[in-house]
View 1 (cartoon, rainbow, N blue to C red):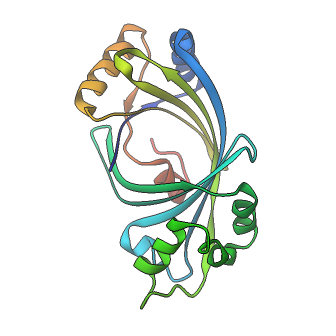
View 2 (view 1 turned 60 degrees about the horizontal axis):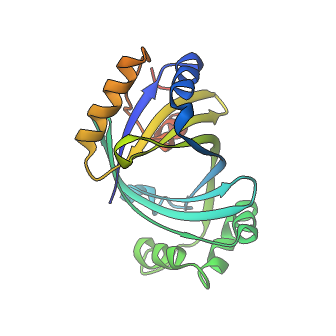
Length: 206
């Protein structure tokens, strides 16, 4: 189970102000490309799951993830997640032709799991790519051993801004983050939807 605090920033100005405040703790920036896949008959989404392929920094790294049963309440996200690295060339091949995911089953535990758990009688007829979005993620080593991720997410319909923190104690982390944002005069709200949900909605949420 992945547990994260997710706080939404209203605009680019708030994102920049937070970036400046966190600058002493900066570690790295990742350029991410996220693509999502489902069975042609909605075999995954009908069971509140989705398959994601994420490319890091062009094709320096590629990670395939199975995410399921996501819940987001009061700025705390809980989601069942299983992931593994795959060859970026294979990831690109699957992006170009989603049915190449069947070939990926030979080397990917995640794809084998999808076929076994979500297919009708162990079978999925075909895969479809739902599209996706790009994300610029700045990573920070912050106080109390927390790692913060500041996201600028680029959808075709607009740009969203969010602060995330994976933690085993979400209430404590949320309290620390909210205090820091208030001290620095940075407006925020609790995220009400995942990036994937925003993508599927086709619009930025108010």
